[in-house]
Length: 119
Length: 119
DNA sequence: CCGTATCCGCAGGGATACTG
DNA sequence: CAGTATCCCTGCGGATACGG
Image (cartoon, rainbow over all chains, first blue to last red; front, side, top):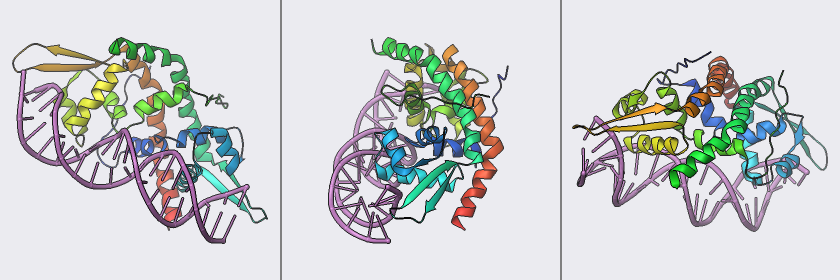
């Protein structure tokens, strides 16, 4: 049963490094949005809904720099830019899926714990 | 397989809610520190190393409110306070473990991607 | 259409001093 | 030992205007 997690907290710490990236407000949402297929900038903007285009741009840049997302520019008029998950990006979807499933299963328990503590 | 992750971005979104908690700078580290066994405040402080005691206190309060950690005070002099993972907290270790393993496996690929992009 | 530049408010988080 | 209170500063993230 995988009861033992060992994390070496000494610098540099891979897990902290990774979480600093996907732990922000938007990265994970973008990754999940790109999971089904390649998408364009405004498509992502509309789908995520409450993200500003600046933050979407910043998030995509970082995901690109970290090798999670590939950016393809088509030199057309009007311009077209497409974003796709790389192999690395797709591989990250698995552990993320575990987290998503956990959240679905247990978010009620969290809500109750909070209510218990505030009430 | 599990290739398809479906996340409903409409409010309230469980996964975003969960990530807002464990996605901060310290929560995950505290959870993992508590994985092997119950620990005391200063013990956690020393083990994590670069966390301030204020942030450790805040983080523990929130983890307690969300039902991940249980706080036990022993009315002694000098005072002794112990922190233990709850059932809920331990259950979260599994998906976290997936993330930790992924980070261990792929952090080199990320480092390379960054170097490629900066160079 | 796809961004960047600029401005700004707010919350996260460090350092330190103090308390029970 | 186990915290709280206070101060301060940085950087995330929103809004808007502008550029290619």
